[in-house]
Amino acid sequence: MIKDADKKGVLAIASETAALAAKARDGKLAPGDMQGATFTISSLGGIGGTYFTPIINAPEVAILGVCKAQMRPVWSGSEFKPRLLLPLSLSWDHRVLDGAAAGRFNTFLAGLLGDARRMLL
Image 1: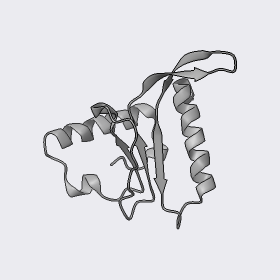
Image 2 (image 1 turned 45 degrees about the vertical axis):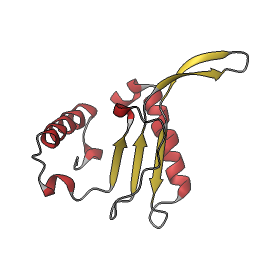
Image 3 (image 1 turned 180 degrees about the horizontal axis):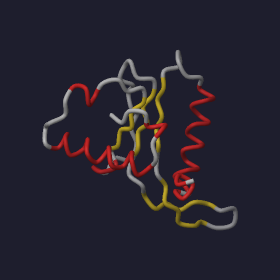
Image 4 (image 1 turned 90 degrees about the vertical axis):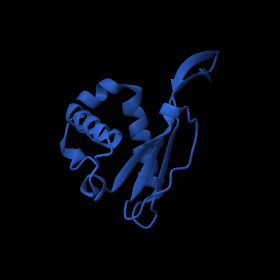
């Protein structure tokens, strides 16, 4: 679990994520490493998953499911052009988060991922 992610840059988050992944692979995650989260990211992309519905783990508020990115034909208005598409699935607790806010978050995230340079600003 990355604590205070909103106060960290991309490189710091990547470094902490790599350290946690190494602990998980080695079977050395402590309970404190996995408690206190409000948001989870789950990925099936590494095993080829294309779509899934992530389930919120209480007391968390939301979970983002990330699937495998694939090149797909997309209609540009006059022709099909190849585009790299990354399916995202967002589940959230409606008692805590308004659906419109969740939708805006998904749109914002897609914009960031569509131009990763924006994350460095």
